[in-house]
View 1 (cartoon, rainbow, N blue to C red):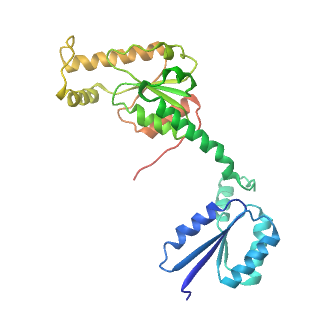
View 2 (cartoon, rainbow, N blue to C red):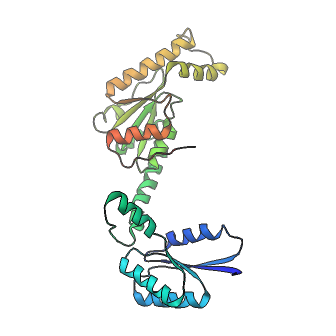
View 3 (cartoon, one colour):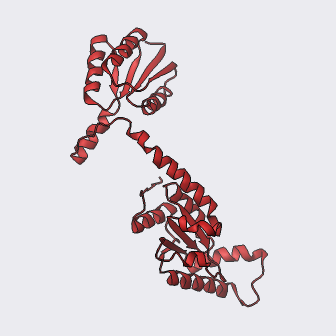
Length: 275
């Protein structure tokens, strides 16, 4: 039995996928191990050199080559030189092809064409942080979405969840005496808006907890009255804006996010199932 393990991670792109698979695999074995990454492999002579070295060093080759003819050449070289070579993409390709009836495009480097998506996501996160809780109203018109909501309706977590999908979100708090600023009113029918609400019983419990160290406003006789006024003001504002209203009492952030992205045809729908 081998006392050490050497894996060659071979890719026609930068090789991150093959290397990560190799790392995740070798960590499960208590043996001396090393990994060598070969990137931008797209010619047969490069494959020959790699397979010669793999034979010399008794290395396992795992590869993520999307061109079928180059993959076939790797397999042929492996058979001739007694090297164990594994196409880690092919089983999933086969499964997707069987499921969809479609053939793979066989285009190299597609994951790195997602770089623009990554930078867009970073910009969305930065924008959302800068426009949290009513900040920077002078640039709120650049938002892809405006979220309004009562306290404790998870405005900020929802906004950050959507920002991680590449959506620039501004959120604005709605309280008992909120009067919307003109910057938001001017964006009615121009920027998608969502109003978050919560059932009265839940809001009452939250307010009772919060008001233990605070006194009620002079014009309010009870917490029940205050909460009712808060909800009434929120619904007046939402009606004025004609925005989508979502009750977040029972739904989690991912589900609310899915509702919003579906309604406004915003990019990406992501669901997270917890067990």
